[in-house]
Image (spheres, rainbow, N blue to C red):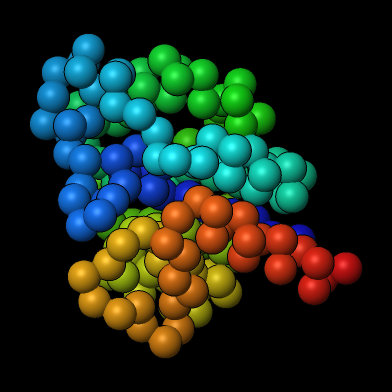
Length: 165
């Protein structure tokens, strides 16, 4: 059974599209941040992963206290929990990217979806499937599974679960 970790910034909120990152969530006030849309297909993709894992899906994000509060508000404002079926307690924050490895160990993650190679590198030997999300400036390392968008995540998950059957 897979246990999945999902980054928030540039994966669920503000992905890089056509070479441009949407930074309005980070560099804005509360009201403007709430208007930042989710990545195309993100909620349906997360809902699919929640269903496929029997609820063993977690959000794991690196950010400071101010962005943590804004993220919690954004998730509530967009009804993320209701739309995806993810348990509200399945939210983990850390202050440094390498700390995601501690969360991955504690949660026994088998999959991590993140937009940063350096984060996924820290998970070597901890997480079996490391999915590098979104547009990248460099080719994905050979150990990473590059998924351009949420449609690609869902296609990957469908292949994983059909091959496990």
